Image (cartoon, rainbow, N blue to C red):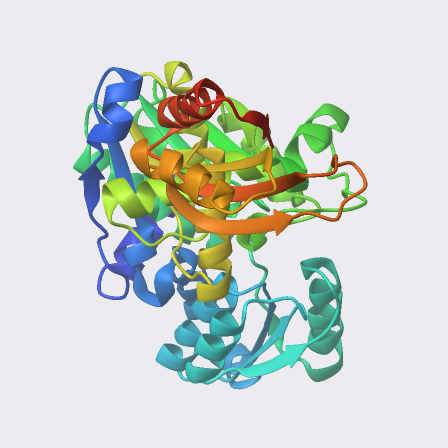
Length: 399
């Protein structure tokens, strides 16, 4: 798969996909020391880049193959891309999804007309079931990343980046199975071999480092990450070869990094992004000096479950030092709790939770423990809150 294949896919997709915007991020630029842009594939049709590869692959099937239908396995974004592409091209689609797939992604895939089959805890089981379905029914299996047409379609993101930011020095891309970063790297390196391409994986689902070291796809025994869109146990043979030959570096980000980046996108960029989609931003936030500007971070998807969004925002607030949990021991007499709350109000801390414990054996007679969760303006403000309570004579334990 070459840059010419990506150019061909771009012609095919010209009237199908959105030419998504490139938005400047002042918050990232200030950290990096030069221009940083966000490539907003969360604003793409179906909410992610996946329609590019799915449509390219299905459109190149023969009439007989399309008449037999297509089958796919996905945690959600590829599922929606395949479902919409199949509908546009007039063929049926069956999609196998893990039992843990976010409900909004399942509902959206069904709304595009696909037949949904849920089963297994991870994408690995869904892939096996989809392959078995293809073998028994004759439907064509649409792999989520390890096919030349899929990689070429995803690579059109890279062509748009070069057109929108001709002087780009670094392109940062999330990686699960590696279809997006493989295609982007092929497109970018064909035109601008000097551009540095960085792949980013979640620490809890980072299959590329071990596979690159071994020189072959090595499945992870277990995965644990909120970034379901890039939770892939092993790269494919094609994507591993592309990453090995074209990608300059593979980095990993923690769950805290992802939470912090998702909150950053909400607050600073006004973008709703899913954890997998924000991995590139997380890498830049975690180590801004590692990315030479002008840099482009691909925001790959925005299909997030609102319940998960709430949890991730809370996690992000904690990771950013915006939540503060404290335990204080105060005299067991009327007005003690009011005194603590007055001190907190005086320093501008917003009380989110309060627990009042007086029966624990660790407490002395006549002593009460107060547990508070506070919202602060950040780490410096949190330090000011603790200092004020200590100055007021309270014994404070920071959790």
